[in-house]
Length: 198
Length: 214
Ligand SMILES: Cc1ncc(C[n+]2csc(CCOP(=O)(O)OP(=O)(O)O)c2C)c(N)n1
Image (cartoon, rainbow over all chains, first blue to last red; front, side):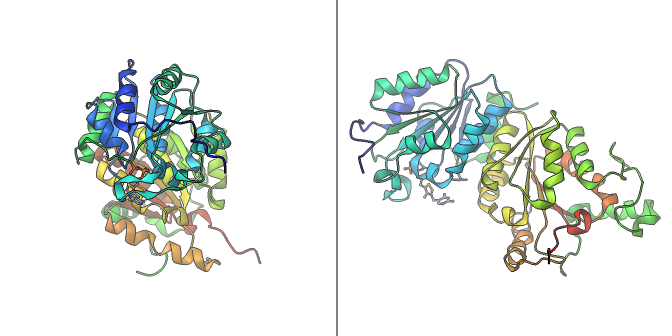
């Protein structure tokens, strides 16, 4: 097959997460998935609008969709690993069908299940995450070829007009932060952070 | 326990009170015109209208489902009622993720599924809903018992109660029309008050179930 990745830079998840967080100006909600996405999100500073997943592999995007439906005025960003997304691909079709304008999906594609020992995922060789997302109906799906393009795509996505998906080829490094292992505290803090507690 | 035995978890004591209050509780199912004690839903309505009314009364607006034949009328009625946001998810755990996110953002939701859908949920329940204390409302149309014709359904159904027991998740098997409103209304309120999930198992005794088309 012709690789979808031939012209893509291999970037750093932590660096891109920092760039992403720097673009957040309107108390956007961010859901950090299982694998390393939540660790690097934690490392960038514990915004009260962040939710860190410690389990339920594959549910980052569904959780983000629920937040987006509940609060249409707040933008919601889902940070998901390629392995986790491949476990729950059907959710992309649901997102496309519901079409929330305020949802952006970011896929950290390292081509491996890094956290469990760096075994290869299908996206390392044969599966193209962006083509899959387009096929699922998320027309606004794109690869970010390098850091500047990632920031441009992200800034555009945060302006509404979603749902959109941005995929970035990243290296095989582990996450840097160490998310607090307290699901109730994480949930309570997130709910306060986004005014979900009535 | 024997197949189809109703189990009401921690509500057992309250249910016996209801039976004392209504001596006619042994009357034939689905016919009693009694009003529920606790909700606005008249008991002479079909089960799915009662469920819809109670969801509405408790401000549960988001409904995500993976379909089941027995739930057809409920799903259809929810779809045409503009109070609700209703859509299908591709998997039950996806639906659980959506209502969990919505709850954290201030919107109440419920998931509708059949027994085999519940069988896909232990991981999502044990690693998201239960440890995060999210009051997810799960309605399960009970297949696999009381005349099941599909061996696979019957076996899958046997995994449901052991999972619920292992996770100590509040659950009620609803067999009686006259108890439906009480159980669902009270349990939804309890779920939000105590930040705990609750599972409503809708028995064929309540819904009629699905029978073999010979
Ligand atoms: C249902 C389920 N299966 C397997 C696992 C083990 N597991 C945890 S994270 C992970 C890999 C995640 O891969 P990816 O999303 O690509 O993130 P990365 O580790 O590369 O950051 C796996 C297999 C799990 N937690 N849950």
